[in-house]
Amino acid sequence: MAEDIGAYIKHDAVDLAPTGEGALSGLQFAAKDLYDIAGHVTGAGSPDWLASHGPATATASSVSKLLAAGAHLVAKAQTDEMAFSITGQNAHYGTPVNVNAPGRIPGGSSSGSAAAVAAGLVDFALGSDTGGSVRMPAGFCGIHGIRTTQDRIPVDGVHPLAPCFDTIGWFTRSGAMMQEIGRVLLPDFNEAARPAGLLVARDCFALLEDGPTAALAAAVNLVAAHFETRRDVLVSEAGPDKWMPHFRTLQMADIWRSHGAWIEQTKPSFGPGVADRFATCATITAEAEAASDQMRDAVRQRMVALLAGGDILCLPTAPGIAPLRETPETALDDFRWRSMGLTCIAGLSGCPQVNLPLTELDNCPLGLSLMAAPGHDEALLALAAAIAP
Image 1 (cartoon, helix red, strand yellow):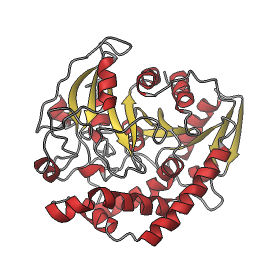
Image 2 (tube, one colour):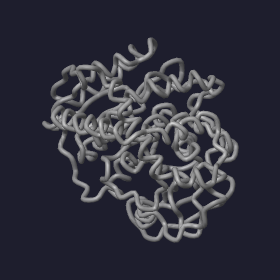
Image 3 (cartoon, rainbow, N blue to C red):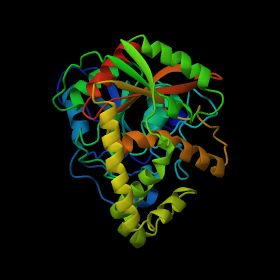
């Protein structure tokens, strides 16, 4: 079945038995093909990267922790090329099937991880999130997903995209299991007290397409029942989508630092869209990066102040449901930019964010997200377990 939906890589077979017993005993998982497994080449969704690199000498610490807790790694999951996309499409390896929205993209770049969990191939899967690569596929595939606080979980042994934004994340079909994975992976895990207030990000909901508003409003009401208070807020007076160009500038500058030398030396064959984005990365100036870095500081201060009392922010995961698989690249690029007006908030601020699969539109999953102050991942996991167990 894995081959039927294209969730797993086909150039290598990975199967690691548990190294211990614990809370995850009996569970099977997949890891995005960015996670190093000793003795195996990390492919990063790119045939050229695969061909130009040797086997990893060590296993990523996140994978090792899961194995020690009793979980069984059964496969490596497909990723968008070099993890530089949020659509789930890969010109070289294909697009995993989104079983909960047939005919539509699964989202990316953690496409195979999300598709495998949605299809019931594994109990959970590891992904990574830079600009939405866990949150978008979780929303599109109708499953739980978390982007953790920036730097909360070590990213050693994980192929980078933009280290200044790269974070560990995972997918499950239940909030309770998502919380259980957090108990294993989050250092110094603390059982969270119930947050008092829900903040509904009015300006974020203004970025929705026309159709999803009513469906998400009902989901917000469901979430609000778990809080003592609820109020509308503005994340940004100018609109959070105005922060997105600064996120892209910082992301692209960091991407070129990480991969520019390899690209210039190897001259890899990138797929449509990916090639253009890498070319843009090479043009970011130090002056532009410095200006955007100042904006990142301002965004962090704003979000920390907004969430300082332990309140939780509620916002859409994406502007709408997953686009159709045959959507033209130009239309997908427009959807990508609009989506990043929402996803850039957590990236710039370092806040954790979870997607909750609470509603649908046109028989397709429609994601709703909760965001907490940096370091308050446990509060989000507890809420996910309570709201969508």
